[in-house]
Image (cartoon, rainbow, N blue to C red; front, side, top):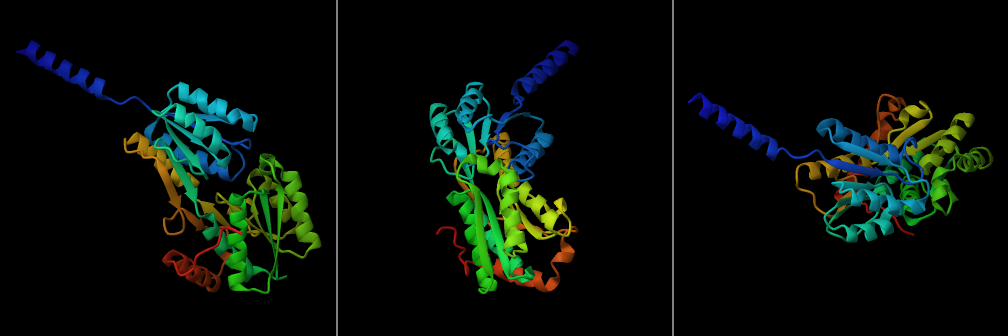
Length: 325
């Protein structure tokens, strides 16, 4: 009887071991900027790290040395049969489209662009809804009635930040003068803080601008330096940068990069991944402006009430925020 019981227990144990799923392998491929931008790439890592802490899978981070290396990196991880490969940024759109079609059994996720393939989850964000609210804040806080914007690469995705920001300013006070500059027209524009600082100093010192929204990836660090040097205000994007310069950062407009990366990994972990577009805006909680202990004194209740009124109208559909010229 004891032998029979022991055999039964052993069989049950082997069955459990055999049924236990293997740990995931997740690849997180950054653009040429990589981690440390205190913005887009760091937000993607935060979502992946949160998932890794929860499920204990293998996370591989890669920063291609050049934009031309992205396709090679995607293909290498696909050949290694990674369970999920995430491309951080719209620059992955074309190379991922090619690689995903060659590896239909591998799951991919693309941030900030859309690929119409069943094994690709396209994670997009209505960031212009968030920058509209930032425009409301800027219009209510500016003392010079001059507000600026500095973008990284001049592409429609970044221009949407500008257009939403300008719309929020205009809706609040159409008499405010708005100035927009871009670091460049190539991917390097997201990693040129020196050029961004130069543009910001010109706006602050020569144009009377006292608030700048920086939507420039790692180049935004140059705008931050300029804000500190001139003691003028800045609005951060993509991740919470309120503590980067307390008293100067009015708010941070975050896109749901962290939460969308986490949720995509979760879907693979739980076996319910699906391709297609996953769009995040104010209504879905995937775009938001941040008020915390660091910047709370900069945004009194009178201002917050006006912002929240605009936010409610956007969520209800009473206000459609523009994102194209």
